[in-house]
Image (cartoon, rainbow, N blue to C red; front, side, top):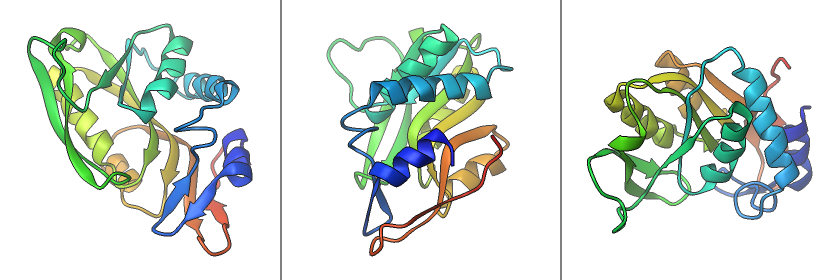
Length: 195
């Protein structure tokens, strides 16, 4: 078991409906030492890529992506889920359906922060059906940016997202891949990955 699998096994809670609750350390209350370790691990896995920006989607991905961007020494940009008065100029947009929230958002990135010169590492906390990643991929492609890779903290391997993204030809690295969960027993089965 890697450091993240150990933490999920210790503090993660399996709920009915294929929900893995990790809000005590990842996506509500955040363990900052764990975030640092996650940042270092993504840097190790993508050390061969010439990353110029890290991109994510609000809100849960922001903290994780910030730690990853710090490791690479590059800016972090996040797709906003709503337009605010201080967001001006031309925008890239994509429709994104949320597995967790059961809704559809139009996500927005300002064209002044993303362009053809960028080499992007996309980061997110969870991968289930892949809708958020596909929205971020669409935005990066609209900007002409090169997607160097996609980094996911927890992938639900029993759902279609990971397979769909890999079948699109993208390099996808997930720190923990959950192959099965049992809400009655709380058991979590992780996919074996090479270190």
